[in-house]
Image (cartoon, rainbow, N blue to C red; front, side, top):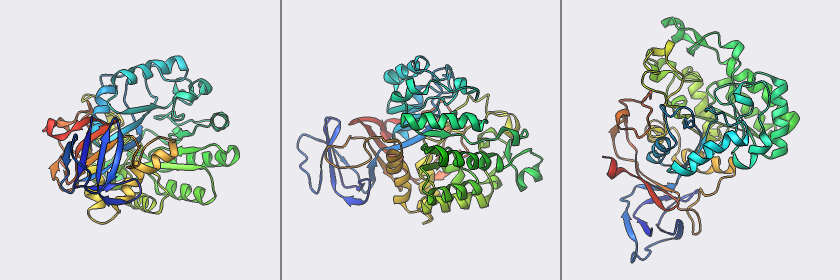
Length: 424
């Protein structure tokens, strides 16, 4: 497919330019001013943003094992609708990818059904039970790293063993940091809102205490270590210091933690997630961490559930919300357009740093690069309507929110995988 993009603002992966971009054979073939149009399908961008496709390093695609929640196909179509051309999929599946044989089923589904690039994680422990290590060596050539996301590794001894093996294999440990002994049946952040409304709280220490433990193990083993869905100000402070100390540490947070806090809660399942929305002070600390470089990646932790599983309020609903189709629109609306966070910072955490951390190709607009591209209109006001999602999941705290940015087109390998006009 020969395509030419003209009239847009182009983020090359490092800077913004006004130029044309030509695509042929799945790759970018030319970047420059006033490129010839002959033989190309021309897209007039009308000042829209053209950028390398986004990467989400924390997505739950639910298949195999839980296809009633999401499938590889529906999840990756939702990713394309959000501007993503690569996602890294979490291992809380059935079977859990804790061996090469278990992983093969997922790899086959990805090869058959994925609309965008998908790279899975392998589980740190057998069955994600935290009792014995998975066959990390056998899975290493096929995975982005190792995670027990959804469950914290409770044993420091076992985490040390995992880090040593991951270090040997050249893969990161991607840690869900949660101390089960500190959860105490909580369902929201242990703060003023929880106490005023009579809900059991989840303390911030349940997140930052395991991070503190693991950072000591990183210093001992030298393992690359990536912290999932950071939500607490103490976690930000620990990770900031670890980076200053030169440890091989990276981390992520999501749009909901940067734009919402426990003051925004309603007793509805679409506000229940793990970790929970924390205090306004935590939210502001996360923004500071984004700006100063402590936070490396913006992720959705896209975690679809059935309508029934999310219908039981804050106490009874399953943990997890969807986010692939709203992430960039929310970030633009609440952080970029009000001048709180520069657009280039958001794009760096969606495009550049994730690829660098996980060794993924692309992320630049230059001749020879893969034609993994997204086009966004930053002035396309619309209301978030979960019934229009391509994901099977509908639970989002942003339902009914007026946002300004909208994905127009997404290309993966030079093929159009999302076109907004086809979904109006």
